[in-house]
Amino acid sequence: MNVLEGKSIILGVTGGIAAYKAATIASLLVQTGASVDVVMTEAAQHFVQPLTFSAITHASVHTNPFAAWRDDFTGHVGLAQNADVFIIAPATTAAIARLALGLADDLISLIALSTAAPIVIAPAMEERMLHHAATQGHLTTIADRGVRIVEPTHGRLASGAIGEGRMASPESVIAAARDVLRPSIRLVGKKVVITAGGTREPIDPVRYIGNRSSGVMGYALAAAAVAEGAAVTLISGPTRLRTPNDAALIEVDTAAEMHQAVEQASDNADVLIMAAAVADFRPETIAPRKLKKSSGQQYLDVRLVRNPDILASIDRPNLLKVGFAAETEDLLGNAAQKLKAKNLAMIVANDANSTIGAPTSTATILTADGRVTALPKMSKESLAVEIVAMVADLLGRTNSDSS
Figure 1 (cartoon, rainbow, N blue to C red):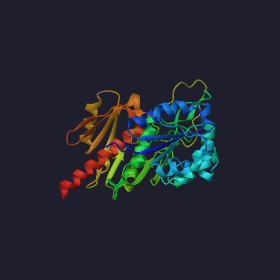
Figure 2 (figure 1 turned 90 degrees about the vertical axis):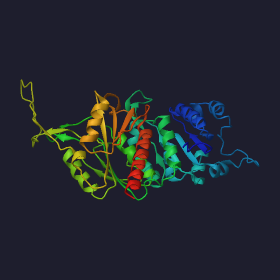
Figure 3 (figure 1 turned 90 degrees about the horizontal axis):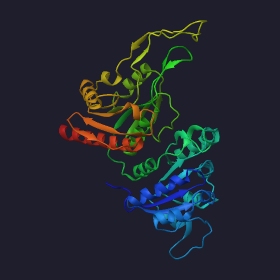
């Protein structure tokens, strides 16, 4: 079902270099059959001309908060009342501050204060601006008010530096808009436990064995499950990601800590989705002090012991278990073996070389009843929506079979 078709969407464009991505967002929205009204700040027009958006949407672009009202146009009031969803992309530091403080000094902030529609924002800025206490405080404030934040990604920034603050892909923004419009009824009353990120297995007080997992997949799954009405517990290794609204976060470091948290959280759960990249091995002993290299030393021997397989060890009646298989060879063969060995209902198989730490994934989903579903390359946010939809289907079938 195309939930965007026929919807009235406002696209707010603020003054950042990522404004060029908003043109792609507008185009994708039009292709879904949505009606798109673009609103631009004065600063945004220094980066992209209104004519670009007018050509894409076949509609006038709104730039002036003081534009005269007519019978067919009542300014920010009419735009706000008619909107089904309000997207702000890119959302600059200043735009986020206006939302948090409730200011009304441009057309975008006026609409934000006047609309009852869900608001989706895609922040974009330099890394230090993103992680400044003021910006983080404003993001927390608007998230608490229900604003959906499409987290910025790690990559090349306008300054030429590499870091966090790059605006999320247009596809991720579209996926978020779909999520906030989709009826949240399929997982109401269900308890879902999701793991995310990688674990850190300490060698000494300052060093550890880890992996490149960003945690994006697990956090996207948590957001998608919350959107479907589930009560979500998110068990996460170290990340710098924002906890999805209404998800309960349990932070862990090691595989042993994650194992204990999953054991407890899944006690009365309906679903366990193990998206975390858990270390298979850990150092047998942890040095109590930082290991110092000696003169002429060429090697450091660290003996590793195996960590327990968390997903395989969890055995609860009526618990639907979902695993992930990130492989570098024989993808489907290895995934099928894990599906059976761990007694899973479903496993998501993808190429470890192209998915770990990346914003996108190309996945093939295998289920215990023999179905194999190959999905095209998509953002992890979009993939999360697909996975949660399949989980809801599997739960529905299980309930039907038992009734």
